[in-house]
Image (cartoon, rainbow, N blue to C red; front, top):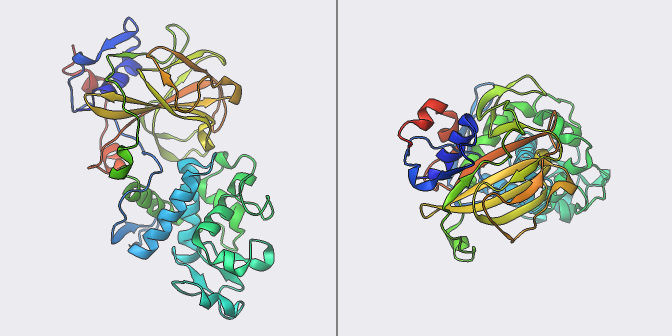
Length: 376
C-alpha cells in the first residue's frame, strides 16, 4: 500500500544495498511506518474523550476542539513552532481554561460583551491562556480573540508583544525543555507541575484534529510523477546508526518517549540526499527539528512525505517549491534544534486519512525482520 515507507525502513536497518531499491519490489503492506503528521487541521469532531496523566477522563466538546484547532492552525503558520510547540500551547490552554474563552467581569466588565464560553475568576486573567491585560499581553478586545491569544502565546518575531511578555519562541532553548516546563516558562503559574498532567490529552487532540488534509486542499497541490527508485539519504560509509523509530529513553529528560524517526550520526557537513524524486514543501528552521527539509513524493499513486532534520541554516540547499531528484544533494548534516550531536534525523510520513497516527505508531513494533519479509 505505502511501499516507500517499507523501503526506507529496510534501507535504514540493512544499509544502502547498491544505493538504490526498485519500488516494484516493495510489496509488504504490513511493513508500514507512521508518524505524527502535519499541522493541517481536518474535520473537527463533535466531542473527544481523553485521559490525563493522573488517570482522569475528560470530554471536550466541539467548541473546545474548535479553539484547539485555532491554536494548531495558528502555530502551523508560524515558522519555528512546529508540532512540539503546538503541543505545549494545547497543554497550557487545557490547564489554564480547559480550552474555553473565559471572560472576567470582575476585573474587566467589558469582557462579557465579547464572544465567550463562560466566566473565569482567576484574578485579572482572560481567555484561553488566562492572559492579563495589565501585564502587557494585549487589550481586553485582543485577549478575547482566540487567534490573538495563540499568536501571543507563541510569540517570536511575528508575535504581537515583541518578546515582552515572552512567548514560546522568545525563550532560548525552549526545545530542550520538558513540554510542561516550557508551558510554565510562559504562564508562570503558582502550580508549575500541573501542565504535564494534560500532555496525553494534548497529544490526543493533535492526533484527532490533524489526522489528514482537507479534501479541498488536494486540488491545488502540485501533481508529482510516480517515483521509480529509492536512494539511501547519506553516502555509503559516512554514517552509523543510533536511535531507531519507536519508543526510547529521551536523551534530554530520560523519560520514555516515542521517537518518530531514525537517527543516523554522521560528521557535520556530510551531504544529505533526497530519498526519492519529489518536491520541496518546506525548507527552513522549525522548532526542535532545527533546520528541516520536507519533501513530498508519489508512490503507488499515494503521497508520502520525507523529513530531514537538524541541519544548520547554512546547510539547507533547496527552497520551497523546487523539484528534486532521488539522490540529489539537498542539505548537510548538522546539530541544530533538539540534538545531542551531528546526525540526520529522518522521518517518513504516509498520508493516511483513515488511521489515527498515535494508534498506528504506538500500537505496533515493526522490526527489521518484519519489514524485510516478502521483499525481494
